[in-house]
Image (cartoon, rainbow, N blue to C red; front, side):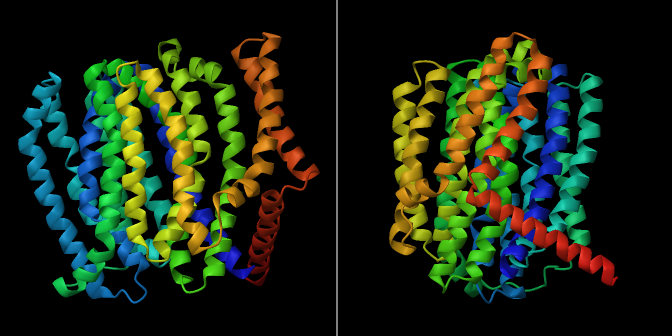
Length: 486
């Protein structure tokens, strides 16, 4: 229980950080969506394809390698730091000179300047990446909360002001850069670690031996996910791309809070227990059951209430994103299964398995992309439901051998949560037939959904619900005890 409380404490701070950041970002996104044309978001989506893909090289998998290595010291961290800085400078130079070619390919001259400015994020990432690994390794997730929130709030003010002032696409560009810059500055102020004047290729070699497989895996995953956007932007219109991205962004805002928190805490925690397979198995199971319990009702409710939410929040001009939103709600519901299984594989040192899985999954995804790309953006999106299910099975496959925890066992563990969410969703769906209008319908659906899900969890004694209640009570009891002692 003590370890569970420690994990919960770190998860709490990481989750609080993600909720704060995503909450502010969501509010800003809503305001900017009302002020800016969907085509502006399409332009930004095209640029982020390149920044996301090349940004993978800055870390080179070394961050995960530092977290996974049991005896990593200042020489390891400093060597990776200077390596990352060098990589960031090289990548920025590449994109600076490639920007006109990309703009010409998409027949959008304004892309040149936007790419050159947005790619400054590479330099910021090079400075911040090792600091982030140090925080994760030492489980100081409270530091992320203050750094991220400070950058997000400041960026929100600047982004909204620039949008109102008519700066268009530059409102989003400056907002993103300001966010990352302030985030990095606060992290450097609050975290004590500093790079030393030391560097060792000999230390980089074993880190790279582990990390290069994760680098290639991340690169394959990022290229694959962004390839869909590249093709939509080229074959269809920037507005089509904007609707696809908006449908993705809203459910991702929710999944990122839980999934990123779990991802950050699981790897260092599992790595510390890598010699005890039974402990890693229990952590994997706990992560899957608890996160699915939290995600299933949110995604179910968001999918059912998608149309009135989009109409109220983003206005009528964004209604074409509703079908995409519902599709991504389904696929993101099961993302914690991917995250927990893959973290277990990484923590046990099997980055080779990780790479093989990514290659196999992306071959399947590319096949789906090639088969659907000429049949419309919506058909492309539906194909991702099928590939998501296949990838769940593949990601869990190694852990049948490594942890004796197979995919059928994982499904049995999450089935009670899924069934409870489905019943809740069916009841909430019926409210729409009252024809009360958007606001009254939502005001009934949301509290009804919460009451039905929590009530059903308590009535049928859903295991993750009881676990969360136990840990929360224990955590609050400890806080009260410390308060009385002080």
